[in-house]
Image (cartoon, rainbow, N blue to C red):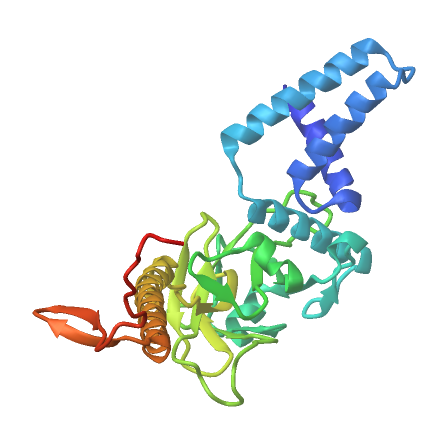
Length: 334
């Protein structure tokens, strides 16, 4: 089982150089490739297919049990490229080398430097965006160590996110591992002890920051390997401090968006009073039109009347002084 796991991890690492930085992406693509070959009728040995499928299932189980974060996978991949750069250049102590990355990782800047522990103790290390103070030792102690510097650039938000905050600078970081024997393929991470002195971090690009001014809302954040983080106040523009290796950035709190419930309340109140005003205006208009019609009818009746009008009690009745037609007695004879 360990042999199968190691073989698959090697395939995943090789695949990730061309298809993506995350090993889980390589695992998925390998599965899709094998299934496609099977259904397309590719001439393969079925025993080999079953062994490879069993390997994929075992590796998926191991990945689900370990549940390693994507940032750890990225660190492992970055260290691998940095280690290859050391082997390729036959490095000189104290020289900073840029790691050659595949095209799909464009936007990242990876560099590595190899130092003697004695020099780190006497002078410290001032490379890239970090200034490690003198009187710093590695735990455990080694003869030579390598420091891998990372600038994730536009990959920062893909691997590091902070709930309620927005990154205003790219994530930078550094890791230290044993480099006493460059030909040894095993990478042993080290811990730095700065004797209580802070590590100076100068961020390369910070958005939304005024020239020479510090926004009171900006915070320095340190991302730990276990997924936790630490927030501290920024004392100098674009500068943060730490006492250990890791990944760092500058964040700004997100503005809390007001809920939309107040819009519904405002709309309901405006609609209610608007309905009342429209109803009152309509009722008043109908009443006014009715009154005008009655007045017009009364005026027309007064202009056309021939008989005089008299009030009898509360009633208005027509009255005539004389009759229009004089009465004539009929004799009954034609």
